[in-house]
Structures are given as structure tokens and as C-alpha cells.
Length: 389
Ligand code: DAR
Image 1: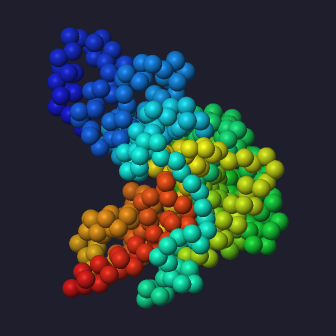
Image 2: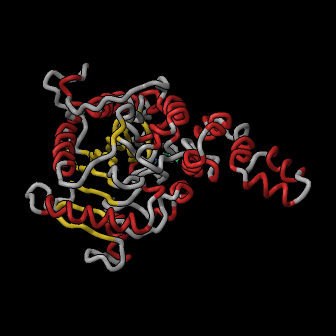
Image 3: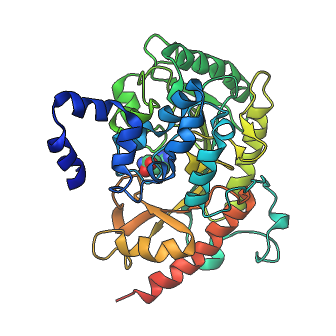
């Protein structure tokens, strides 16, 4: 709900035209929102004085980036990059956003590294085996967002761009189909595509946690333009063993992920890295990188690594009240975020099962993310035991 101040302004406007003028002037709208929504990072980092110095094309690009946070003032981040070079071309804005969200200096530079050799405080053999924490086989998933540098990011893609991206990726998937370790098939949501699947088959893949949910239902992605043309140009590649998956056309051009029910995090990390190397080595596929910020992603929360390493963990004691509030309060200081088992904005699963992942994505290496998941789970399990009735 808008704050009382904004409502007062609406009433005070001399007439409809004044109110429309305020609403049609996005900078005026942002300035109205700034005192009302302190947790909306994009709104808080938007500087009208900086905006005024920009040429018209960069003004339009910056307003496009922050539109989601204007239309959804309850946003936590409130912005998405819409061109691969937005982070570099609009650095005075995005450096503030990144510093505030990731709690890093404004001049921070990201380094990518998948090698656990460089990570301190691990077991002697560097095996991140959850069974050593007394845990059984769990559902482990590690995913990386990637975007092709020769397309606009999803927020600014045309319908034609989305179809072209899907066609380009279907040709690339032929390489994976021919490999025993990744062989599988592509499922398309684009009517008329030779791999098109109907609504029932789509629902089955969503229920199996393989395909992504209906993007039209996400008001943040809709306001950002990322959900536009749904479901055209969207689909997912799935390996025969259903443990290697590539989403096409979700929040990033690609979400490349490996899933496994097991206890050794290294196995999932290594398989994902191998698949990424195969995909990135395919002729014509060039991922968008920034020299300062690493892997370019739509959302600044994912910038740098684009990696989310997660597992499903039963926390019946910490969720005994039926909510994830206590689990979140304990996980947050451990650098962990808690979600429902269906992903962002979904409820807790059976027996208090929740999705746990390190919050950090930026100015942390891929190896350190996976190591922090292992260390965080050990600490969280100790808290779960303490909460035992
Ligand atoms: N809800 C949006 C995005 C938060 C981060 N989650 C992503 N990128 N899926 C917000 O700005 O709060």
C-alpha cells in the first residue's frame, strides 16, 4: 500500500492532470517512494542528480532497469540489468546497489574460481561429504545463470529475440544429446516448435522441480519485462538421468544446473563445471562477462558467479511453528538463506523440509560458495539439535 504521504500528495494535487504528471514523471515517482520504502535498494540508490547528467539513451536504460522496483516498492533489490553492458555503462548506480546488497566496497571487483584447493578450513581430503555431518543422502542442486553477450538481457528482449535464442540453444543442445553423460532432450513451450509440449506435460515437469514456474505469475519479472511474451522462447533441456538441466529464457538466458540425491557436494560441483565447459565451448555461444563484475546476470543479486548452491534439509524443530521464520533468523547470521522446497516464495515442505543456500553470489568464488554451504549446514544442524523439544 502506498504510504500516507503519497496518498496525501494524491489528494493535494490541484487536479487529475497534476497527479498524472507526478505519476508520469518516474523521477518524481522515485523521489516520492524514497522516504516510504527504505528496504528497496534500487529506489534508495537512485540519485536524481546522477540521472540528470545522463544522455537520453542511458536515462531510458536506467529507468528500464529500476521499473520493477518502482512498480513493486516492496522489492528487496528493485532492479534488473536489461543489457549485458548495463553494469558497466551505469556503474555509478549499480556500484551503489551492489555495495548495499552484497555488503562490499563500491569499487569491489569479482574473481571467479571453481578450485577448492584455494579454500581454507576444509576437511584434509577437501571432500565436502554431508555424511560426515551425520546427514543422509539429500537433494543437492547447484545452478549458474549465464547470458549470451550477443542478445539483450531478458528484460529487453523482443519476441523475435526470444525465439532466436531458443533456436540457437536447440542447435547447441545437439552437442549434449550426443554425449553419454549429458544425453537427453529439449522441451519447448513455444507453440509450433518441433519440441513443443502441452500444458499437462509442462505441469508434470514443474511438479518434478525440473521446469521453471509460470513467469507471468511473478510481478517483479513482469514489471522488469523479463516475463514478456510468455511462454514464447522458453523451455528446458533435460539429461536422460534428469540430473543435468538447462532452463532457456527464464530470468537469465540460461540457468545451467546439476541436481543429485547424495551427500558429496564436490560431485555436483564438478559435474556442473564440466557441463558448463562443454556448453561454453560450443561454437557461437559467448557468455556475457564484465571485467569488474564477473558473470553478467539479470538480477544484481546473482552477479559475479550466477551461482546458487542449495540442498533440501529437514528442520522439524526449527520449523515446529509451521513457518520458516526461526530457521531464517538462525540461518541469516550463518550466511545462509532459506526458501520453500518449490523455490522462491514457496511454502515449507513435509517434515519441515526447506531449501538452504548461501546468500553470497558476488565477490566470492564458486568454490567458496560450495564450501560455505557445507560449513553452514554443519552449524545449522547444531542449532536444529539445540531446538529439539
Ligand atoms: N523479488 C525481486 C528479486 C529478488 C531476487 N530474486 C531473484 N532475482 N529471483 C526483488 O527485487 O526483491
